[in-house]
Image (tube, rainbow over all chains, first blue to last red; front, side, top):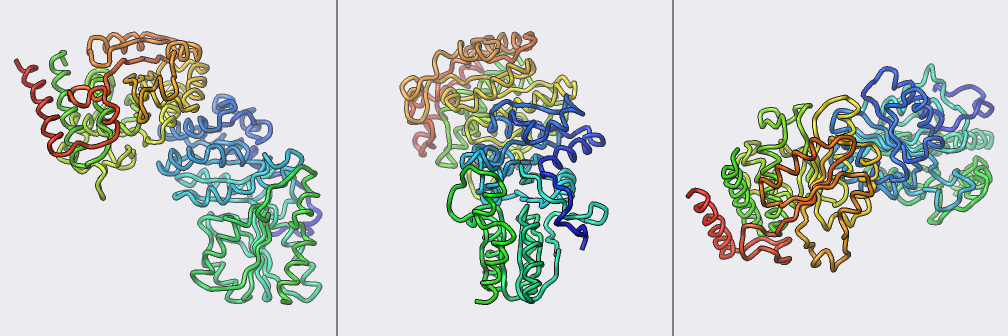
Length: 320
Length: 278
């Protein structure tokens, strides 16, 4: 299943770090690769690319809207562009630029945004974007990827480069355990990954919640509840076939995401089941509310997104 | 082309605009007519490697219609240049037409960038000019802005970047007709003074008469000679230029003429053509 043994104790790397490294690696082979930032290169880790290829790193200053459209102009002249900022400013402030000048035109621009979700931590509500997947998913032509760890983030960046057209990649600030074995793991846009097989309930998880869901599934196993854990790294297009296949077996589904329960993974899975296999689902995510300041780990616990909370909720859901 | 030929070409483009917005019974004649001479000069004199047989030539000069609602003038110009058949102009805004209400680069050969949402086109032009610099190519990039459009903050983000990056292969042309949908720009939310704004963003500023080809030639020649900074040509224009009852009338910003108005507009343009042929 390509999960690292003893994954609970592996090293931790933030997916933004993986992003910077993956860009620096891609830059060696691909002279058409341009990386853009809006004064956050040190935080989004595009600075790792800048160190290697300063001429191909374009800092636009604090002007995300302009950056997205410059990216489109560069792409129209044959460049493959990765444009980065925090999720809030990339997908929120520059939403319309992404919609009209990147997605409608189908130019080869990848919006890769870090500091998504409440795990931003201390910066608080203005910087904790829990709406980015929802916003990006609603735009035609847009692929939406939310990698779970270092291995997957690197693979996703490479796949996004190779994919012709607009892609949104969600990245995190918080260092998270490396779950997937880079030598074995195969990443394919649009394909969910069964990380643990089970028969009583399917847990669909995305991003850093994949790790929490796996830990929860182990605890459930000890209670005699067999949970299937599926990593949905591509929220759009979602792997409909796998969603239906798994729920046909387990008959109950739970979605876990560090994102609003409105418009993200829960909505994407619900859209599949409502059309193809009406199934009882439970949403674990950020309820319809803003985040606030605090250490990331404590916030994850407070918002009920840690393994223990997931374990409790799924247990009750299965026993209903 | 000599001046008379340019004037005839511009008049043909104006006729195309009227055909389009009449057939569509909607669209934006005012700001299309005001920029018809500018596009004529660009496509028939100024821009290099513009070839209907090779619309994607990587070395071509680029044009971005940042004021995308003036799509009728771009389509009429592309038709006059041979990128699309003139007969297609009457399909503007209709279901199944390539000629969308705002230009779509994936549908119409010769359209270098999809535009329509004000303020975004200039940034894409900046991206194209930057690409030329990165690739050490000598193509140039032109972008036409509305004078109301510069109320959008993103315009100034783009100008700050272009000035800072010394993009001397970028020419911004401001279609300064003085009117926007809700009235006179100086009464809605005045963008004046214009010169000081562009100058402070490290642009070279040139004034031109948007309806005088000698003036346009002088401006574009000066822009080409300007090194180390982008150029802004502030082109004083008349909204609705060429159609007497549309000139300086804000009501003609965004509506198509009825059959009677169409006849009157075409009669005006026929009269201009006759004069040019004498």
